Length: 317
Image (cartoon, rainbow, N blue to C red):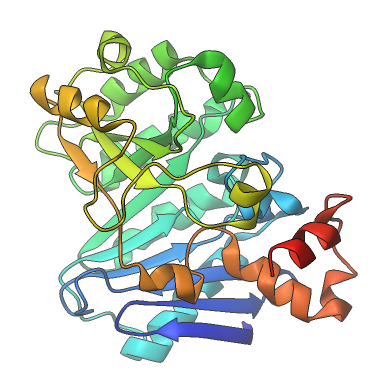
Protein backbone atom coordinates (compact mmCIF):
# COMPACT_ATOMS: atom_id res chain seq x y z
CA UNK A 1 0.00 0.00 0.00
CA UNK A 2 1.37 3.39 -1.03
CA UNK A 3 -0.11 6.12 1.14
CA UNK A 4 -0.93 9.15 -0.97
CA UNK A 5 -2.37 11.31 1.79
CA UNK A 6 -3.62 11.17 5.34
CA UNK A 7 -5.56 13.54 7.51
CA UNK A 8 -6.90 13.52 11.03
CA UNK A 9 -6.17 13.05 14.70
CA UNK A 10 -5.19 9.62 16.00
CA UNK A 11 -7.20 10.22 19.17
CA UNK A 12 -10.40 10.65 17.09
CA UNK A 13 -10.13 9.38 13.53
CA UNK A 14 -7.63 9.28 10.72
CA UNK A 15 -8.43 9.01 7.01
CA UNK A 16 -5.96 7.42 4.63
CA UNK A 17 -5.88 7.71 0.87
CA UNK A 18 -3.89 4.81 -0.47
CA UNK A 19 -2.87 3.33 -3.79
CA UNK A 20 -3.11 -0.45 -3.83
CA UNK A 21 -0.67 -2.81 -5.50
CA UNK A 22 -3.01 -2.81 -8.55
CA UNK A 23 -3.07 0.99 -8.73
CA UNK A 24 -6.55 1.53 -7.30
CA UNK A 25 -7.03 4.62 -5.14
CA UNK A 26 -8.92 3.70 -1.98
CA UNK A 27 -10.03 5.47 1.15
CA UNK A 28 -10.00 3.87 4.60
CA UNK A 29 -10.24 5.03 8.18
CA UNK A 30 -8.98 4.17 11.64
CA UNK A 31 -11.07 5.41 14.52
CA UNK A 32 -10.90 5.43 18.32
CA UNK A 33 -14.51 5.96 19.48
CA UNK A 34 -13.61 5.82 23.18
CA UNK A 35 -10.43 7.91 22.64
CA UNK A 36 -8.39 4.94 23.84
CA UNK A 37 -7.35 2.47 21.16
CA UNK A 38 -6.51 -0.12 23.81
CA UNK A 39 -10.20 -0.17 24.70
CA UNK A 40 -11.69 -0.11 21.20
CA UNK A 41 -10.07 0.32 17.80
CA UNK A 42 -12.06 0.50 14.58
CA UNK A 43 -11.01 0.17 10.95
CA UNK A 44 -13.49 1.20 8.27
CA UNK A 45 -12.48 -0.09 4.87
CA UNK A 46 -13.63 0.21 1.27
CA UNK A 47 -15.00 -2.82 -0.57
CA UNK A 48 -15.08 -1.24 -4.04
CA UNK A 49 -13.25 1.52 -5.89
CA UNK A 50 -16.13 3.96 -5.80
CA UNK A 51 -19.69 2.63 -5.84
CA UNK A 52 -22.31 1.95 -8.53
CA UNK A 53 -25.29 2.50 -6.21
CA UNK A 54 -25.30 6.28 -5.88
CA UNK A 55 -27.14 6.83 -2.59
CA UNK A 56 -28.27 10.43 -2.33
CA UNK A 57 -26.13 11.25 0.71
CA UNK A 58 -22.95 9.35 -0.13
CA UNK A 59 -20.05 10.74 -2.15
CA UNK A 60 -18.68 7.32 -3.08
CA UNK A 61 -21.23 7.12 -5.89
CA UNK A 62 -19.60 9.81 -8.02
CA UNK A 63 -17.46 7.15 -9.73
CA UNK A 64 -17.00 3.40 -9.95
CA UNK A 65 -13.91 1.51 -11.09
CA UNK A 66 -14.65 -2.02 -9.97
CA UNK A 67 -14.08 -4.49 -7.16
CA UNK A 68 -11.07 -4.63 -4.90
CA UNK A 69 -9.45 -8.04 -4.59
CA UNK A 70 -8.54 -9.89 -1.39
CA UNK A 71 -5.07 -8.38 -1.16
CA UNK A 72 -6.39 -4.85 -1.68
CA UNK A 73 -8.89 -5.34 1.13
CA UNK A 74 -6.23 -6.70 3.46
CA UNK A 75 -3.85 -3.84 2.65
CA UNK A 76 -6.38 -1.46 4.22
CA UNK A 77 -6.32 -3.53 7.41
CA UNK A 78 -2.64 -4.36 7.59
CA UNK A 79 -1.26 -0.85 7.00
CA UNK A 80 -2.86 0.82 10.04
CA UNK A 81 -2.19 -2.30 12.13
CA UNK A 82 1.50 -2.14 11.32
CA UNK A 83 1.59 1.60 11.86
CA UNK A 84 -0.08 1.64 15.29
CA UNK A 85 0.51 -1.82 16.74
CA UNK A 86 3.49 -3.21 14.87
CA UNK A 87 1.11 -5.78 13.35
CA UNK A 88 -0.57 -7.18 16.48
CA UNK A 89 -3.51 -5.09 17.81
CA UNK A 90 -3.46 -4.76 21.60
CA UNK A 91 -7.10 -3.80 22.13
CA UNK A 92 -10.12 -5.19 23.95
CA UNK A 93 -12.32 -4.73 20.90
CA UNK A 94 -10.94 -4.82 17.36
CA UNK A 95 -13.66 -3.87 14.91
CA UNK A 96 -13.34 -4.06 11.13
CA UNK A 97 -16.22 -2.44 9.27
CA UNK A 98 -16.99 -2.98 5.59
CA UNK A 99 -18.72 0.38 5.42
CA UNK A 100 -16.55 2.89 3.59
CA UNK A 101 -16.66 3.10 -0.21
CA UNK A 102 -18.81 0.59 -2.04
CA UNK A 103 -21.65 -1.85 -1.38
CA UNK A 104 -19.79 -4.84 0.14
CA UNK A 105 -22.22 -7.51 -1.08
CA UNK A 106 -21.11 -6.75 -4.65
CA UNK A 107 -17.63 -8.08 -3.83
CA UNK A 108 -17.16 -11.82 -3.04
CA UNK A 109 -13.61 -11.09 -1.83
CA UNK A 110 -15.20 -9.54 1.27
CA UNK A 111 -16.29 -13.04 2.28
CA UNK A 112 -12.75 -14.35 1.93
CA UNK A 113 -11.45 -11.63 4.22
CA UNK A 114 -14.19 -12.31 6.78
CA UNK A 115 -13.20 -15.97 6.84
CA UNK A 116 -9.67 -14.95 7.84
CA UNK A 117 -10.32 -12.13 10.32
CA UNK A 118 -10.89 -14.52 13.21
CA UNK A 119 -7.11 -14.98 13.40
CA UNK A 120 -7.07 -11.65 15.26
CA UNK A 121 -8.06 -11.60 18.92
CA UNK A 122 -11.17 -9.76 20.11
CA UNK A 123 -12.47 -9.44 16.54
CA UNK A 124 -15.82 -7.72 15.96
CA UNK A 125 -16.54 -7.68 12.22
CA UNK A 126 -19.22 -5.43 10.81
CA UNK A 127 -20.89 -5.08 7.43
CA UNK A 128 -23.30 -2.40 6.23
CA UNK A 129 -25.52 -3.03 3.23
CA UNK A 130 -28.47 -1.61 1.30
CA UNK A 131 -29.56 -5.22 0.60
CA UNK A 132 -29.46 -5.16 -3.21
CA UNK A 133 -31.18 -7.88 -5.21
CA UNK A 134 -29.09 -10.37 -7.14
CA UNK A 135 -26.56 -11.16 -4.42
CA UNK A 136 -28.49 -13.77 -2.41
CA UNK A 137 -25.56 -16.17 -2.72
CA UNK A 138 -23.33 -13.64 -0.95
CA UNK A 139 -25.84 -13.29 1.88
CA UNK A 140 -26.13 -17.07 2.33
CA UNK A 141 -22.35 -17.46 2.53
CA UNK A 142 -22.18 -14.50 4.91
CA UNK A 143 -24.71 -16.27 7.13
CA UNK A 144 -22.58 -19.43 7.17
CA UNK A 145 -19.41 -17.51 8.09
CA UNK A 146 -21.18 -15.62 10.84
CA UNK A 147 -22.67 -18.74 12.40
CA UNK A 148 -19.35 -20.57 12.28
CA UNK A 149 -16.92 -17.86 13.34
CA UNK A 150 -18.70 -14.85 14.88
CA UNK A 151 -22.05 -15.92 16.38
CA UNK A 152 -21.94 -13.29 19.13
CA UNK A 153 -19.74 -10.50 17.77
CA UNK A 154 -20.82 -9.87 14.17
CA UNK A 155 -22.65 -6.60 13.54
CA UNK A 156 -24.89 -6.59 10.48
CA UNK A 157 -26.45 -3.30 9.47
CA UNK A 158 -29.13 -2.61 6.89
CA UNK A 159 -29.38 0.93 5.54
CA UNK A 160 -33.11 1.75 5.63
CA UNK A 161 -33.38 5.57 6.02
CA UNK A 162 -37.14 5.76 5.31
CA UNK A 163 -40.22 3.60 5.72
CA UNK A 164 -41.72 4.87 2.46
CA UNK A 165 -40.90 2.46 -0.38
CA UNK A 166 -40.98 5.10 -3.10
CA UNK A 167 -38.71 7.44 -1.17
CA UNK A 168 -36.40 4.52 -0.36
CA UNK A 169 -35.98 3.96 -4.11
CA UNK A 170 -35.09 7.62 -4.53
CA UNK A 171 -32.50 7.59 -1.74
CA UNK A 172 -31.04 4.20 -2.70
CA UNK A 173 -31.49 3.98 -6.49
CA UNK A 174 -30.95 0.24 -7.02
CA UNK A 175 -33.29 -2.72 -6.79
CA UNK A 176 -33.39 -3.84 -3.17
CA UNK A 177 -34.81 -6.47 -0.90
CA UNK A 178 -38.25 -5.72 0.48
CA UNK A 179 -38.70 -4.99 4.18
CA UNK A 180 -40.17 -8.49 4.53
CA UNK A 181 -37.10 -10.14 3.06
CA UNK A 182 -34.71 -8.08 5.20
CA UNK A 183 -36.71 -9.05 8.29
CA UNK A 184 -36.73 -12.76 7.42
CA UNK A 185 -32.98 -12.79 6.80
CA UNK A 186 -32.27 -10.76 9.93
CA UNK A 187 -34.10 -13.23 12.13
CA UNK A 188 -32.10 -16.09 10.58
CA UNK A 189 -28.87 -14.15 11.09
CA UNK A 190 -29.50 -13.49 14.78
CA UNK A 191 -28.03 -15.76 17.46
CA UNK A 192 -29.22 -15.85 21.06
CA UNK A 193 -26.77 -13.83 23.11
CA UNK A 194 -25.39 -12.19 19.97
CA UNK A 195 -25.83 -8.72 18.54
CA UNK A 196 -29.16 -7.55 17.25
CA UNK A 197 -29.47 -6.62 13.58
CA UNK A 198 -29.09 -2.88 13.08
CA UNK A 199 -31.54 -0.84 11.02
CA UNK A 200 -29.86 2.44 10.18
CA UNK A 201 -31.76 5.65 9.54
CA UNK A 202 -29.61 8.53 8.30
CA UNK A 203 -32.30 11.06 9.05
CA UNK A 204 -32.98 13.94 6.76
CA UNK A 205 -35.87 16.24 7.56
CA UNK A 206 -37.64 15.04 4.42
CA UNK A 207 -37.40 11.33 5.24
CA UNK A 208 -40.72 9.59 5.88
CA UNK A 209 -40.58 7.43 9.01
CA UNK A 210 -43.28 5.58 10.90
CA UNK A 211 -42.68 3.52 14.04
CA UNK A 212 -45.88 1.47 13.75
CA UNK A 213 -45.10 0.50 10.16
CA UNK A 214 -41.56 -0.45 11.15
CA UNK A 215 -42.89 -2.69 13.92
CA UNK A 216 -45.01 -4.63 11.43
CA UNK A 217 -41.83 -5.93 9.80
CA UNK A 218 -39.08 -5.74 12.42
CA UNK A 219 -39.49 -6.95 16.01
CA UNK A 220 -37.61 -5.49 18.95
CA UNK A 221 -36.26 -8.90 19.95
CA UNK A 222 -34.07 -9.23 16.86
CA UNK A 223 -33.60 -5.66 15.57
CA UNK A 224 -32.30 -2.38 16.97
CA UNK A 225 -32.55 1.09 15.47
CA UNK A 226 -29.60 3.39 14.85
CA UNK A 227 -30.19 7.05 14.12
CA UNK A 228 -27.39 8.96 12.42
CA UNK A 229 -27.23 12.51 11.07
CA UNK A 230 -26.94 13.37 7.41
CA UNK A 231 -23.24 14.12 7.15
CA UNK A 232 -22.13 17.24 5.25
CA UNK A 233 -21.17 15.38 2.10
CA UNK A 234 -21.10 16.87 -1.38
CA UNK A 235 -23.90 14.52 -2.41
CA UNK A 236 -26.12 15.58 0.49
CA UNK A 237 -25.63 19.23 -0.43
CA UNK A 238 -26.20 18.53 -4.11
CA UNK A 239 -29.48 16.75 -3.33
CA UNK A 240 -30.60 19.34 -0.76
CA UNK A 241 -30.81 16.79 2.05
CA UNK A 242 -31.32 18.63 5.32
CA UNK A 243 -29.98 16.95 8.44
CA UNK A 244 -32.66 16.39 11.08
CA UNK A 245 -30.40 15.34 13.97
CA UNK A 246 -29.19 17.97 16.39
CA UNK A 247 -25.51 17.12 16.85
CA UNK A 248 -25.46 18.92 20.21
CA UNK A 249 -28.36 17.09 21.88
CA UNK A 250 -28.27 13.93 19.76
CA UNK A 251 -32.02 14.05 19.14
CA UNK A 252 -33.92 14.49 15.88
CA UNK A 253 -35.85 17.70 15.44
CA UNK A 254 -38.77 16.94 13.13
CA UNK A 255 -38.62 13.21 13.84
CA UNK A 256 -38.24 13.30 17.63
CA UNK A 257 -41.62 11.58 17.97
CA UNK A 258 -40.39 8.67 15.82
CA UNK A 259 -37.53 8.02 18.23
CA UNK A 260 -39.65 8.39 21.34
CA UNK A 261 -42.33 6.04 19.98
CA UNK A 262 -39.73 3.43 19.09
CA UNK A 263 -38.37 3.54 22.64
CA UNK A 264 -41.87 3.24 24.10
CA UNK A 265 -42.40 0.15 21.92
CA UNK A 266 -39.37 -1.54 23.46
CA UNK A 267 -36.76 -1.00 20.73
CA UNK A 268 -33.14 -0.34 21.53
CA UNK A 269 -32.40 3.00 19.87
CA UNK A 270 -28.83 4.17 19.34
CA UNK A 271 -28.27 7.84 18.52
CA UNK A 272 -24.91 7.75 16.73
CA UNK A 273 -23.50 11.26 16.46
CA UNK A 274 -19.81 10.62 16.82
CA UNK A 275 -17.26 13.35 17.39
CA UNK A 276 -18.12 16.46 15.37
CA UNK A 277 -14.41 16.81 14.62
CA UNK A 278 -14.90 13.91 12.19
CA UNK A 279 -16.68 16.32 9.84
CA UNK A 280 -13.61 18.54 9.86
CA UNK A 281 -11.32 15.55 9.37
CA UNK A 282 -13.48 14.20 6.57
CA UNK A 283 -13.86 10.71 7.99
CA UNK A 284 -17.53 10.51 7.05
CA UNK A 285 -18.43 8.31 4.10
CA UNK A 286 -16.93 9.38 0.80
CA UNK A 287 -15.90 12.85 1.92
CA UNK A 288 -12.15 12.88 1.71
CA UNK A 289 -11.64 11.13 -1.61
CA UNK A 290 -13.43 13.86 -3.56
CA UNK A 291 -11.40 16.53 -1.81
CA UNK A 292 -8.25 14.61 -2.65
CA UNK A 293 -9.19 14.05 -6.30
CA UNK A 294 -10.17 17.70 -6.64
CA UNK A 295 -6.69 18.73 -5.54
CA UNK A 296 -4.88 16.15 -7.70
CA UNK A 297 -6.06 16.68 -11.26
CA UNK A 298 -3.69 14.06 -12.69
CA UNK A 299 -5.51 11.35 -10.74
CA UNK A 300 -8.95 12.91 -11.15
CA UNK A 301 -8.60 12.82 -14.92
CA UNK A 302 -8.44 9.03 -14.92
CA UNK A 303 -11.80 8.68 -13.16
CA UNK A 304 -15.25 8.77 -14.71
CA UNK A 305 -17.35 11.25 -12.76
CA UNK A 306 -20.88 12.53 -12.97
CA UNK A 307 -21.09 15.07 -15.78
CA UNK A 308 -21.44 18.08 -13.48
CA UNK A 309 -19.03 16.98 -10.73
CA UNK A 310 -16.54 19.74 -11.47
CA UNK A 311 -19.21 22.40 -11.08
CA UNK A 312 -20.47 20.79 -7.88
CA UNK A 313 -17.01 20.68 -6.34
CA UNK A 314 -16.39 24.33 -7.18
CA UNK A 315 -19.78 25.36 -5.81
CA UNK A 316 -19.24 23.73 -2.41
CA UNK A 317 -15.59 24.62 -1.86
